[in-house]
Length: 132
View 1 (cartoon, one colour):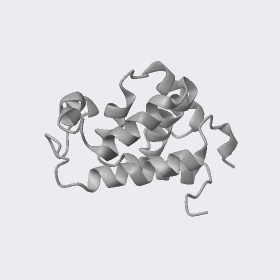
View 2: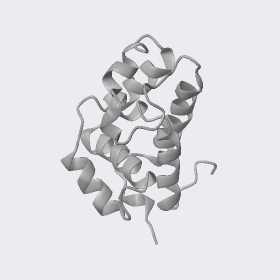
View 3: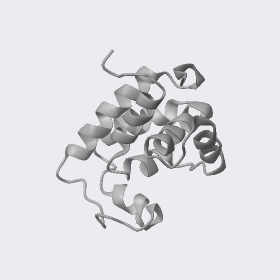
């Protein structure tokens, strides 16, 4: 049985970020250079988001993520890994997030068009439903 209490970040904060990420990616102007890259590194995520520095939703998400503690930011990255099925368990996803932490986390996360789905899937795995 999964335990949502292993998170350092409040799951309601993640649910709020899910809504904002969906708003951001629903905009027509958000485009990605390659529809199906062979690896995540084929995303030039810094360049992709350079055109969105003045976007209100982007700035809102960026400010929220920047205000989070290191441990909470690690949780966001861990949730992406878990929800994307990169790992079968929280501990492995969390360790990978620690090992691969990215200082410019907002841009990296928002460069993934399905980040909201990944976070939501991970919360489901941890038995938390944003609809509560």
